[in-house]
Length: 128
Image (cartoon, rainbow, N blue to C red; front, side, top):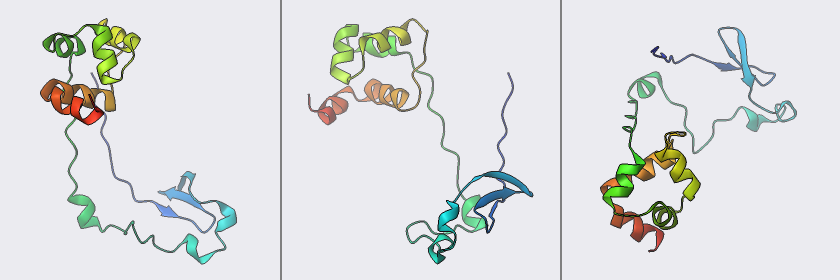
């Protein structure tokens, strides 16, 4: 298993609207037709520029632990159809997760974590 390391790179926005890192173009950043306007380079009011110290103070969010949807569903004593209906997931998705053809990711994994810990809170939140 290989681990991916991430780095923070310094980038700058060229006068022609291209984002550069170490002299190489990273991606198109600003529509070139808007570059002649002063607002193109003005700081955004609700997105302040962060200092290096502020960026260094950020901490990585812990990833969610793997969760078995079947265990969560069985703990609640629900059928696949009932679980899918109550929590707004398709029955097919539940089957895919439980048969390990797919893994719940992102928001679905977070929802399963909350359902596992506080099923009544989820039911109240979705109006059941």
